[in-house]
Image (spheres, rainbow, N blue to C red):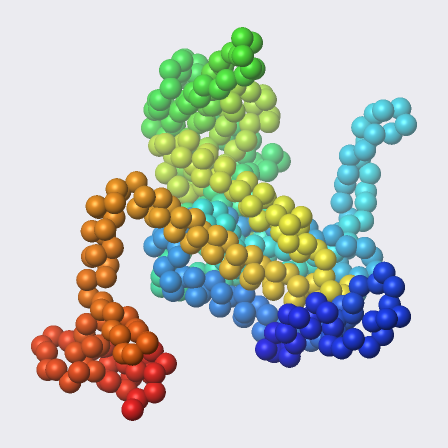
Amino acid sequence: MNLVGFNAHQIENGVCKRGKGRRRHKPTTGPICDDTLARNIVKIPLKVIEQFFNKVVRILAKQEFFPETISVVIDPTDIQTTAKWKGRGMSIRKKRVRDKKGKWKEIEIRVYGWKLIVVFHAPTKIPLAAKLVKIEESEKNYTMELIKKAQENLGRYSKIIRVKMDRGHLDGKTLWQMNQEGLQFVIPGRSDMQVTKYARRLAQVMVKEAGGIPTSPGIKKVGTAGYIQVREITVRRGVGKNQKTEKLRTVVVGIKGVVSYDQYGVEGFAKDRYKRSFQPHKINTVVVVEWEGKNYGRENWVVYLTNMKVDNPLKVFDEYDERSVIENSLFKEAKQGWFIKHAPQKTERALHIHIFFTLAIFVLTNAYRRWSEKREKEESEDFLLGIRRWREKVNVKSKDKSLVFIGDRYGIFWMAEIMILLGVKVRDIPLKAGTPKEILSRYDVRPP
């Protein structure tokens, strides 16, 4: 309001009453109209709005909002528009539809717009870095750039140790770079990849060598490089007398040192794969044989590529499962609740400014909500302590403070500050107390 120059009353009722008598059933026009506001918002430089978003994350990191080591998710989402938007991209994609006879068929469609790629910390629901590109561009070209930007925003206060990604980020060169820089990764392989097919065959052989899937939950080692792990969960289905319990089983196979991913290396590493001297790099895989009681057949088993240890393969499986949080907690929420697709103008610049400004406010809101929930939890814990223990806790917090009255005014001061203002010489006074002038200015009091 200070920047624009209008207060809340003027925004609601306008700056004068001229024309009020002639206005019938029409809302009062504020000091500026929507179009004027939109034309001015889009004048913000793109670097400034991106810097604003990045600094919000940096301030939270400096306040130790994140743990010392974190695991992040990187994922894209389409921001679809019409063909009339200035600067929009265009991608040709396949879509399954039913024909007049009810049979499924694939058709090609044109999709217009942009692609938003975000590095996301799921436990706090905070986006750490973001980039807006044309919808036809591949997200794998920006994976390392965004992870480095996220780490730059976190600074020395928190360190990224693990990255979960979708298939769109699958790139052997990028995965190898992560491995060399000490970053763990989990990403599903595509069905047409040689390493995926090979891992499925190996998993099938290991299950046979183990005499079939173990009947009891636990981890079973197979050979020198395989681990079969079974987990069972009990769920209730139905209501009342018809309620039944059912056990759902998940079976995963961890395989160490698979050597059939030729692209897993530096730029141009795979060009020598047909030479006899070629030595591929090893990568670990986790194959999901059975997922909560459902076995979709060997050709459809999900295969995760990772450099994590696979002696406990369900840990890798659960790590990737956290990736789905970004869909509901960020993308769905941002599109439906925060209207991230509704830019002030139908231009690339307007959408860019709108998205980064919205993300910054999204970060601040979630940070406040997390702080508020923590505060309410502490207050509820204080209530459960009992009045005597609660009083002791308050006394401990306030033992170094005093209430000072001068006439009809009062103030709460630290004991060290009172001693300095009285001119009493006391040992071990904290340096942060400051001089009398600094103390008075801190409390907005003019020195006599």
